[in-house]
Length: 103
Length: 103
DNA sequence: TCCATAGTTCCAAAATATTCGAACTATGGA
DNA sequence: TCCATAGTTCGAATATTTTGGAACTATGGA
Image (cartoon, rainbow over all chains, first blue to last red; front, side):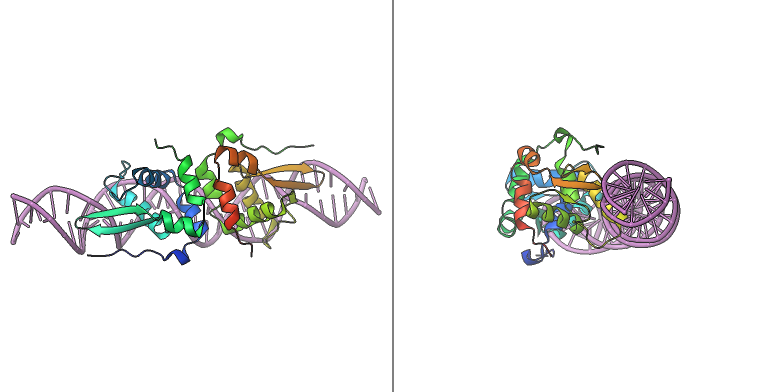
């Protein structure tokens, strides 16, 4: 099974997480993932934008260390790296998640 | 005494706060303000950049609702809007502040 | 093998941000 | 009134992001 590269938690910077969360589309993706509490495909997380735009946002979420994507057959399964981020930046992501109101 | 306009807390968006905190210079300013726990002038918060650059960053911090600036004579006194932001987005800013390590 | 599906990558255009010098404003003190 | 100080605003150059169409890759199923 192919793998996608993700940053190790040690190299994740808080400013990168802040940046990733500064876009409403990405905040919404993160909110959906948190609410679902399970892996979701890009298709499920689609926000009515072109695929290439969505792919761009997922790329930034991955690079920031917020989202992990594993490939499963035709689909890419995305999940929040909540536990790791909570350990490195306690309280930050969990507090953000509590304030997200999905559209 | 002249006043500078700030957004009411009702109009402060979490994504704007995230954006403001996505720049290391602005994160540092916020860290200094939090650590000091008092009003600080732009001069005290200077990061060795041109005045116009610093002014730009303060503008973004104000627009995001993170920083309040009052004019006192020749100086501008900046402070964190910590209590207001904590009330609207409980735990977010306080958690961020705990992870800031000043250079 | 052929095709549809799920996403990514590539590319270029448009929009936003950042930087910093120069000019400007307001204040307080000599 | 003149000057230095503290910051903002303006403007232009540069850099970074965002957007989306088109082409591409990998997979599973017919």
